[in-house]
Amino acid sequence: MALSRGKGIIDIPSNHSVDQTVEAFKGILQSKGVALFALIDHSGEAEKVGMKMPPTKLLIFGSPKAGTPLMLAAPSIAIDLPLKILIWEDTHGKVWISYNSPVYLQERHGLPPELLQNIAVVETLATKAAE
Image 1 (cartoon, rainbow, N blue to C red):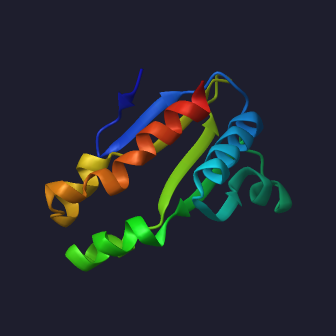
Image 2 (cartoon, helix red, strand yellow):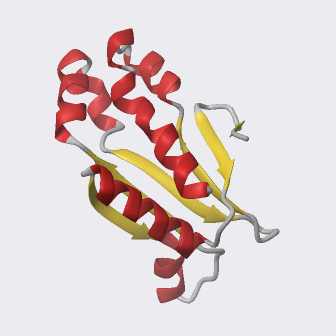
């Protein structure tokens, strides 16, 4: 079940811990030949400065083969590419996977409908990692 909090963000619950979900997502990316450009450990960085927050990790990933046509059609989408997935734990211990809705990104940047599939893959990847 995906939940939309408005502002184009989709949240889906994960059946695993943050670290397990991150590892599952990394494995899925690797199996699909999609590059993982960065993994930002927000909670780890907070801990380094003496602050505490629930586990929160951002993965930045993509494929130039999918992204380049998007940027050629609508150069402003480069601000939202590469794609991002946020894997985080709420204050109740529930783990979530959050990402920008592909339709939101399409509308935000005026992408042609035939290119929606280039970013819609994020939904499939998130769902598989949550299982």
